[in-house]
Amino acid sequence: MDLTKEELLRYSRQITIPGFGLQGQLKLKNAGVFIAGAGGLGSISSYYLAAAGVGRLRIVDRDTVDYSNLNRQIIHWTGDIGSYKTDSAIRKLREFNPDCAIEAVREEINEDTCESLVADCSIIVDAMDNMPARRILNAVSVKKSIPYIYGGVHQLDGMVSTFLPGKTPCLECIFPDTGFAPSATPPSILGPVPGVVASIQSIEAIKILLDFETPLAGRLLCFCGTDMTFREFKIKRDPECPVCGKSKTED
Ligand SMILES: [Zn+2]
Image 1 (tube, rainbow, N blue to C red):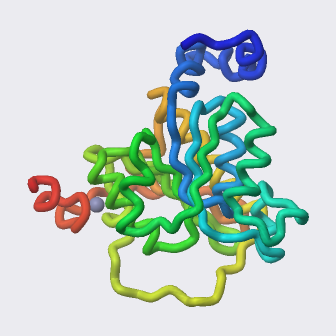
Image 2: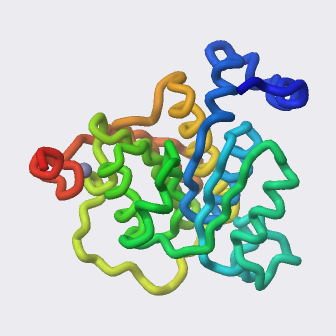
Image 3: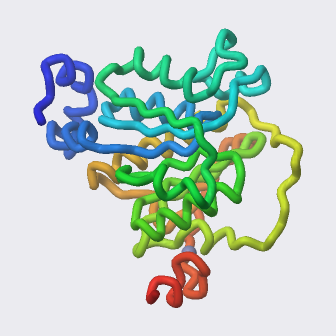
């Protein structure tokens, strides 16, 4: 598959990055990315990955747009209130980049659906707002050996890491399930914070798809908007991890 004249122009400013090139652009064109959620994080990662020329994006969300989403979920506009987020997202993204095939699926990500929803995608971008759903994504990432790019936000803070099955810790290694039930109150979030986190996730996704530069693997990057600092923590695989640990991977 070649690039059209329009594609060469559209992506010219990234094709010219050393190490990216036409081959990199073709890899993006042939790739399928799974975006779990069309909220604050998914709004940004879907825009940037469509803009970058990823050939196929599968976005899964079952919610509708309401006013409390609009401070950060910038793919949804005031006129979309009451619409399904998948319908709202697909309208914007198809107009934004018609070269990108958008599959918007209105379904819940749970233990029964996740594996088939992720099938035939080569990367999982986490745009969820809760840990139980993330644990399900993580388990499928490990089982199917699909890289998983984690992102989370709270108030003015965020976290990102890239989990590469078999090479790095998984989500469960660093956030083991303690049975703690999160508060039912929706968390407070300053609008641009998911923008920062999902932009980093998008960079990671592109790098992984191209096998280009150094991924955020084995490291947890924490962004603190209150004092505007980035801190990085080395993270290690837990040999007893119930998802990726020795006993599990030997099965
Ligand atoms: Zn693990």
